[in-house]
Amino acid sequence: MRWFPLFLDLKGRKVVVVGGGTIAERKIDLFQSAGPAIAIFSPTVTPSLAARVAEGQFTWEARAFAESDVIGASVVVAATDDPDVNRRVADAATARGIPVNVVDDLELSTGILPAIVDRSPLVIAVSTEGSAPAFARYVRARIESAIDESFGDLASFLRRVRDRIKQRFPDLTQRRRFYAALLEGAVPDALRRRRPMEAEVAFERALMGSTASGGRVDLVGAGPGDPGLLTLNALRALQAADVVLHDRLVSAEVLALSRREAELIPVGKAAGFHSVPQDEINALLVEHARAGRRVVRLKGGDPFVFGRGGEEIEVLAAHGIAYRVVPGVTAAVACGAYAGIPLTHRDHARGVRLVTAHCQSALDAVDWASLARERDTLAIYMGVGSVQRVEAELLAHGQSPTTPVAFVENGTRADQRVIVGTLKGSAALAAEAAVKSPALLIIGAVAALAPTLSWFGDAPIQAVYPADANRLTA
Ligand code: SAH
Image (cartoon, rainbow, N blue to C red; front, side, top):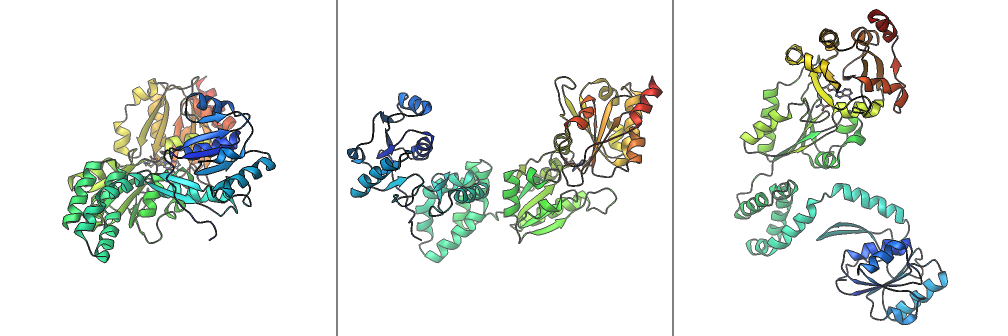
C-alpha cells in the first residue's frame, strides 16, 4: 500500500480549489458534505458554480492562481485543464506541506480523493491508488448495494451505547462476542424497519443478557423471473439469509443470489406439483425464526398480490416474530413491460384491474359484469385451464368479442412468449399455442400494441383467430 487512507476533519477548515469547470465542481460536491470553507480561484466558473457562490455556499476569486492562494489551506485541489497551472499549484502546496490532489495526475498529487460510500457516521473510502478510478467507482457501487441506509443509524446507535457496553463487558473477548451477536441480532433489524424504539428495547434486553434471538422473517417478492428486477432490499435480504423458503415460481437465477451457506427449502405452489400445505409453511416460518435464524420467505412477483403474504405475516404477528415485507415486481407490471403492453394508456385504458382466476372458487367470486363494463385493462393471473371460463363470462356480460388479448407466458424470462389475439377465440388460441404456466392474460385495447412495441425476446405471435372472430360477430 502506497497511499494511506486517512479521514480528515475538515469542518470549518479551508479547502482551496483551483479551477472552475465541471470537474472542479464535482470535487467541490465531494468536499462539501464535510463542511469546509471552500475557496475557488479561477478566471471563470460554470454557471451553476457561480449561482452557488451567489448563494454563499463558497467563495470565488475571479483571477489566475497565485502561489499565496494555498496559504492556510488544509487541502488543495488543482482542477484546471492547464498542466502548467496544475504544476504550480502542486508545487506551492507541496512546498508548504499541504496535501494536494491534481486531477488526473498522480505524479503531482500527494493525496487521492477516494470513491466514497457515505452512511455517516459510517464512511467507506475506496481507492485503487489511482490505477483505475472507474473500477473504484464500480467497487463503491457494489458496497453501496450491500450496505443499506440503516447502517448509518446503526453506527450512530453504537456511538451512543459504546460506553455502556464497555462498562458491562470490561473483558475484551466478552465484549467482542457481545458485539458479534448484537450486529446479527434484533437491533439492526429494528433500525432497518425504522423502529428506533424497538431497537432501544432490543438493546437493553441484549445488555441484560436476555438476548432476543434475532430470528426474523423477511417476506420478499422475487419478481417474475429476471433477477435484474429484484430490489436492492430483496438482494440484501437474500445475502443475509440463513434459510430461504421459496415458491416454485421463483427462478433459479434469483435463488442463486442467496447467501451461499443459506439452506434453500422449496415449499411448492406450482400447478400440478405436490406443494407444502399453507399450515406447514406457517409452522416452518415460526420454527426457523424462533431458532434465531434469518428467514427469507421468497415468493414469485409481489408477496401481497395473490401471494398469501398477508396470511403468513398474520401468523408471524400473532407469534410476536419480527418481520419485514419487501415488495417485488408483480407479474402484471413485469409482463406488461416486457411484452410492450402499457397497462394504462391515455388513448386506450385509464386503469388496470388485477384479477385472479386460478381456481373454481376464484372464478366464481369474480364480478364479471363490472369487469366487462369497465374500460380498464384486465390483468388475469390464471391457471391456464381457466381461459375458457374467462372468455365465456366476459362475452356473456357484454365485453366486445374483438377486444384484444395477449397471453404472456414465462414473462421476463429467456423463453418468454407473447401471443396476441381477440377475446373471442382466446381459449382456442391458448390451446392451439399450447400456452403453459406461468402465464398472464392481458385483456384490453392495450394488448394490441404488443406487436408494435415489442422489444424483448421473440416477436409476438399474432393469431389468425381475430379475423375469424370478427367475421363471426359482424
Ligand atoms: N405473487 C405473484 C402472483 C402469484 S399467482 C405476483 O405478484 O406476480 C401466480 C400467477 O402469476 C401465475 O399463474 C401467472 O398468472 C402469474 N405469473 C407469475 N409469474 C409470471 C411470469 N413470469 N410470467 C407470466 N405470468 C406470471
